[in-house]
Image 1 (cartoon, rainbow over the protein chains, first blue to last red):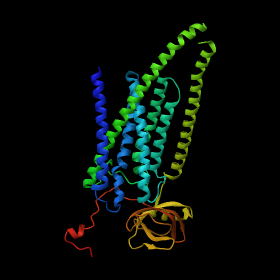
Image 2 (cartoon, rainbow over the protein chains, first blue to last red):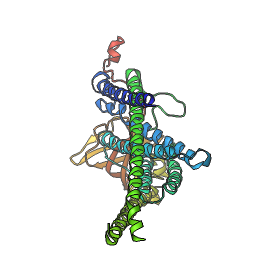
Image 3 (cartoon, rainbow over the protein chains, first blue to last red):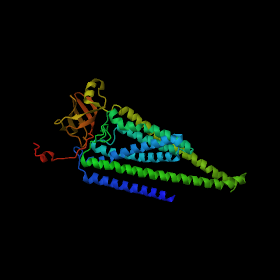
Image 4 (cartoon, rainbow over the protein chains, first blue to last red):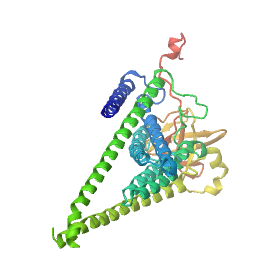
Length: 246
Length: 155
């Protein structure tokens, strides 16, 4: 029984270390090895961070949606799916925040503004707030299953904004450029070592997401077990008092 | 444990739960307010973020002196630095407009780059107070010696 638990912990540690190493390698390649770009010069170096963190946000919300669907369907309803949905959404909110922050830092020198109300930026801000709302909803005290069902429904509603964010540059006039990688023709518009470094960034941040979500899930699981143990102890503690009152 | 002690112990979680409920509803309310603000800004700004030079010229009479954003490409050779900013011509398809900008253009501002400018028409010119550079999604390594390396000359 203890062998698989140990190997799972080792796997998680290995995942964390790999993510850290690959993120470090991405930064080294992005800052010191890759060349400056035409027009953008050294400002291009944010390319290796901004699209990968945005991708991870999409991925995180995709996982939250899948886990929420599994929780909503009574035949597959497990507490684990609710916890995975929550853990993934938490990581997603962090990465959406990072997407907005890195985009703003990149936007100031390239566009000339920190922020503008174009469709993609606005839809991303909406996405951030929707999932922040999802996490706030989870904090409202209510019975576990009711919270699970309500949160799952909220997660499904919030996910509607993900395709809107991605397609906004095609549906409306925007200042933000169209995707360089996840475009309809899947034609990567990044050249040479810059493309490989970007790909590495995608892998590194995806592994980072997996480690963060897994770790958060384990913490939530343990916290619930502790709460249940505490509740059981508290009931045991009150039983004699109740008998005295009676 | 006497009766009062038991009552106090039982009341504490109820109070905790009530204050937790108030706090979480307050947070939820603040998030909903922020969401409403962002959606309002989006509805009033994002749906028609800019007009092209062509569209703006076509509805010039209707636009009057209202402030809006206009998209086009900076015409090479048209940029003139002024004490207050920069003057240049912007083009979209065959439509052209002279732009008088007040302020510092962004560092990537240069000939042939697409820009979105914010301002209004006044006479024959577009008075702008904000230039935003609209760069492409194509990233190519800088290669200043490309022509020389290929055996050519830049002149």
